[in-house]
Length: 171
Image (cartoon, rainbow, N blue to C red; front, side, top):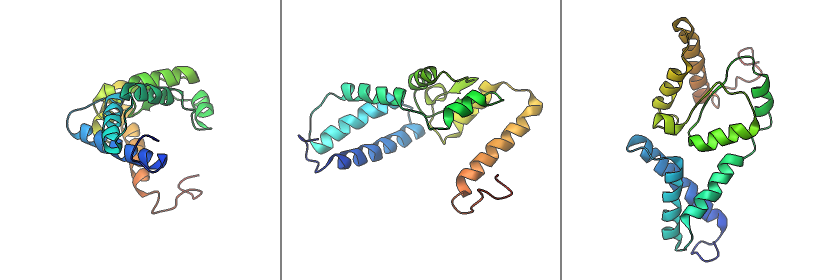
């Protein structure tokens, strides 16, 4: 940061995340790239934009360590350890980060679908289709799963407009 034209570190971080998300969306629509490849490209663009030199691979390796070793949300591990039904993880992260992170947490996971496995990032339907393919459930169970996914998608779109928490609908 000190050797760049940026005025403060948060300026570089905000620019990096904005550009990273643009590249991710672009790769989701066009030619798929892994999270690592997108991060690497974003570092190169940041170095050009802010006029500083660094080792983009080293920066990506540091980011990989962060992605692999980030602590989970406080309630995630107890939930996963006590969940009475199989849990399938669907994530926009690269497979390596997910597998290593889940191995470190030592939680029971029935299956995993990453962006690499599906060639798409959330919210693209391809990643969810890949997850449904991997579940391999009986046909009569599928309507219940589709209903749950439908509720989740509906909830994600409406929760800020209609306060449903602590109501008869969401207890």
